[in-house]
Length: 114
Image 1 (cartoon, rainbow, N blue to C red):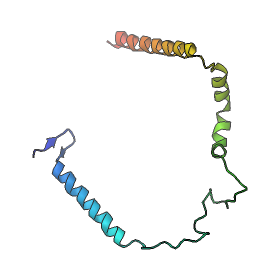
Image 2 (image 1 turned 90 degrees about the vertical axis):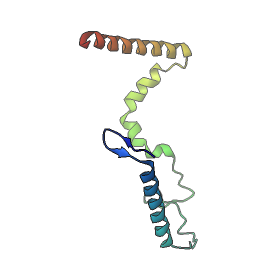
Image 3 (image 1 turned 180 degrees about the horizontal axis):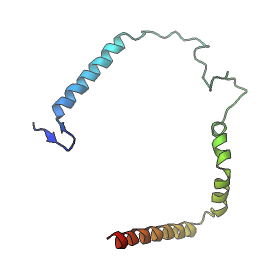
Image 4 (image 1 turned 60 degrees about the vertical axis):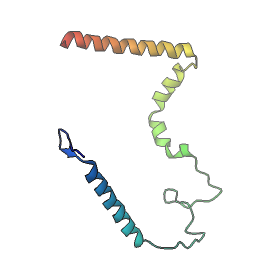
């Protein structure tokens, strides 16, 4: 088995396998000290929702967690919604326009900095 020499050092599959086996042995030894059983109780099984008590009457939607983010970017999303038409022709036009601008920038860079 050979050693692969790279710019930053070397890599030998045998050493990797040995370290992997050592890590698995360490994980197994740690699992021996783990608690063997779990006593189920209603209080222990309650969901943790940001430190607040959860009840069936208080349903928390995923959008409630991101309210501040959406409020801060509201102007951006309003603009995006206004230009969104849902027509494939518009998407293709935007795609061609963006690709054209990118190609112009790349070719200008090649011409200028050669």
